[in-house]
Image (cartoon, rainbow, N blue to C red; front, side, top):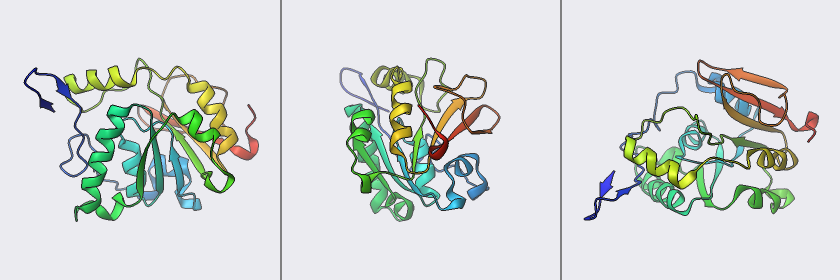
Length: 207
C-alpha cells in the first residue's frame, strides 16, 4: 500500500515479495482441489480466468503449469496486475511460472464472444465477486479500494452462459461452500473447508 500527499490509498500488487499469499505452498500439486476441477491431470492446461480480480487463482494455475489468460475489466486493477507480472517475469524466483500468465484488460463477456475457434480455451474459470466474498489478506484500506473498483459481479449468470458456449472441455466456477450454484446444478463439485469448485462439462452442458 502506498500513500500520496493527499493520503489516497493505491492498490499495489507484488508477486515477488508476496503479501497476498500468491506463493503459498502447493504440497498436493495436481491433487489440489482447483487442479482437480480444472483437470490438469487430464491434460487440460489451457485456461482463461474470466474473473481475474487480485490474480490469486491465476497465479496458482500458472505455477501448476497452466497457460493462463486472465481477464480483468477494471483498468486500475489490470494495471496493478500487469505491473506486478512484468516484474515477476524478470525475477529469478518467479520467472519460471510468470511466463505462463498473461493479463488482459477487457470485459469478459465481450472477450469470450469474440474469440476465434482456435483461440477458445480448454477450460474457463470463474470466481465471481459477491457481497459476502471471503476475506482477503489485503490490508483493510486496500480491500475497500479493491471492492470499490470491482463491485459485485451482477452479470455472473450471463458470463457463465457464455462460458459454457465457449470452453472446449469444461467450465469451473468457484463458490462459497454453502451457496447455491449460479445457473444450474453442476455435473460435479469439489468441496473444501470454505469453498467449492462447481464443474460443468461442456459436452453435457445446456444453457
